[in-house]
Length: 235
Ligand SMILES: [Zn+2]
Ligand SMILES: [Zn+2]
Image (cartoon, rainbow, N blue to C red; front, side, top):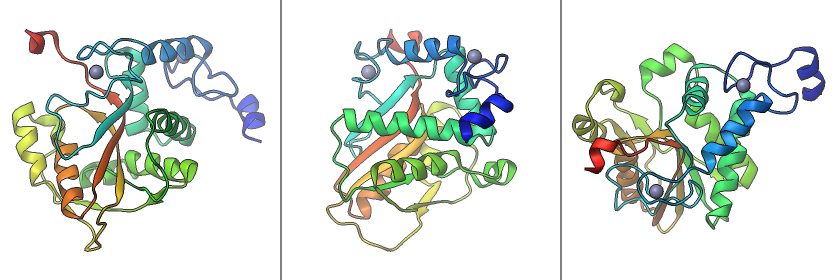
């Protein structure tokens, strides 16, 4: 049925927005090639392929057991994917990315049995503006793909938008931006935290620290795009 609708009302390609997406894809044929190429570029930090890279953000947190992501946030196509995910309510993109993230999780050898899944919550002002939380939506689809236990663990305290802060103040701001959304204990359980882009790692570090306080013994951060190391930072 979806395929039939796709032929009658061709979807715009998520990569370029210009051409129509291939009938069974979120991309046009050219952008599909560009996306696949993004998945096999070398990480600027560890030199491994993206699917083998576990670098995570600038300052990885000791509360995080592993970081798993799909692509680097470095090309027009990765920016289009993230922009569309954050600002447009397109179910097909969420389903596609959820499948990709599910596959990445399995490929990394993550245990799924009895594992909980949650998300980095969107700021209240953005939630109001756009009407959805993109990471929550991704987590929902991944949970159903892999039979994980979806749970809402974190709430926003308000806080300034991370986007407008420098990297240092992002770390500090994030630490007091979140609070537990439940009193439940999860002693010895495994958790997956879903996010869209990880840059400074401030948000995911703060969430992982809260998760450890709730009793989780294994915390995976699963996200779409990793901000590459800037050339200046490498010197
Ligand atoms: Zn395209
Ligand atoms: Zn790496």
